[in-house]
Image (tube, rainbow, N blue to C red; front, side, top):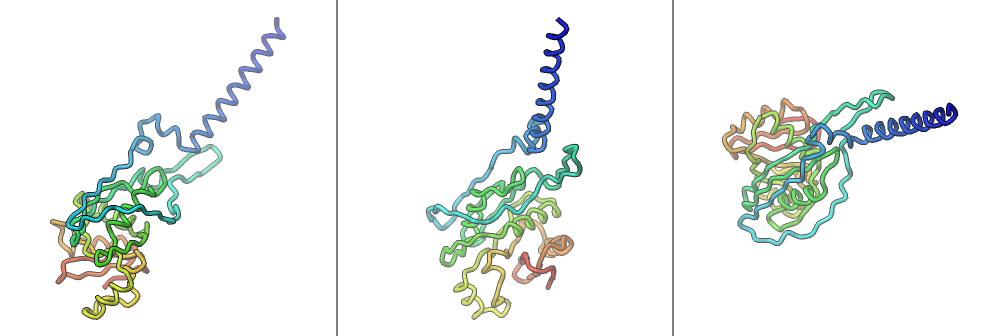
Length: 233
């Protein structure tokens, strides 16, 4: 009788240890965040594109952009996790030249969402010739931080997104303000406006963030952002 009791006790201890290990493994993977109703676990991919004056069919696209974000930082062997970034990041756009509108979540659960990045690549295409180029995810994060800094929910009006080398060369013939090796040609720059927000206010907020290049064009009514070195003009 005592021998059987000891045997059952040993089995129960083994089960408890296995359950504990399973719990810690799930916690490390972040799966238990769902228990608290966290938006990390429940937030769905939300993106809608409304085409404007150009009725192009949305092509199938692929991107090879690497995952560049890390959402969890481990501090010790006790599986303590620090959430260093927002659970998800959402942006809204409206293209000044095509009329295209887009609202989406492009980052969620520590990952950039491939389909959302493709939608952004298309929206920010060179509208002169429809060339598409991958947009730097660091630029998207810069826009997200700017949105948070300004405390706005209105869309970013895109004056200029990606520019093909041909378009950039053509613009240089008519304006001395277009750089020969513009970051626009690398998908690393954007010129924006925000309805109801002064251009100077946008400029000051962007400079305060110190995330990259900031150009101020009050006469044209837009602010330039890029992921180059921290500088302003």
